Image (cartoon, rainbow, N blue to C red; front, top):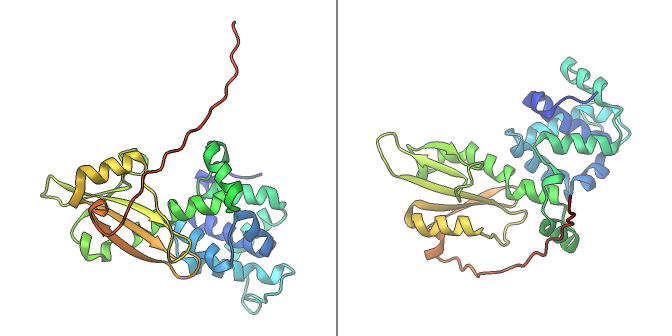
Length: 254
């Protein structure tokens, strides 16, 4: 029986991701929309608040027990806590296991908009991989690295991603009333396009020099970041785009 993802400990989530990638190999990558294991390690690792190497290590630990081309850690003693996860989940079919892995990072296909679904069909990109790269993985990357950034030294971080305020993080000094607003975006490659929602654009306009666009690039290989302060007044050029969505419903008198 599958557990509620919210009740699964972080380490077990990481182990499950490794088990899935080992058991289903390239089919697992295809199901999640990743182009390589390196990309999967980076995106899932950061999304779960862990290191990409941890996902790889657990995949390698399970490799000797599945018929893939890798030997894995075949000379290493199978750790008991890994064996426990292996015995409980090793027989999951690929569809069920895919759904479980997606749920571990809070991905819910029922909340995907019609526009996003059509975009997925148009560009052939997995919505799961895209969502994690542009959202949770990039946000967790920022949370892990922000203490080392000179731009934000001495600031305490507050995650505002669920507050709908037009930016992902609020950074404030203990003795200051004003705060910095940071919006985080992620890209699969070293270059690409980022977009601002109307609310994010309004926040960038309102906070101007106190607004930062933090872009994590190159999840497919080795992630790195670039920081744009007051992005609407810098070297970036944002073009306004409008889209019209026709929503259909059925009505009956009762």
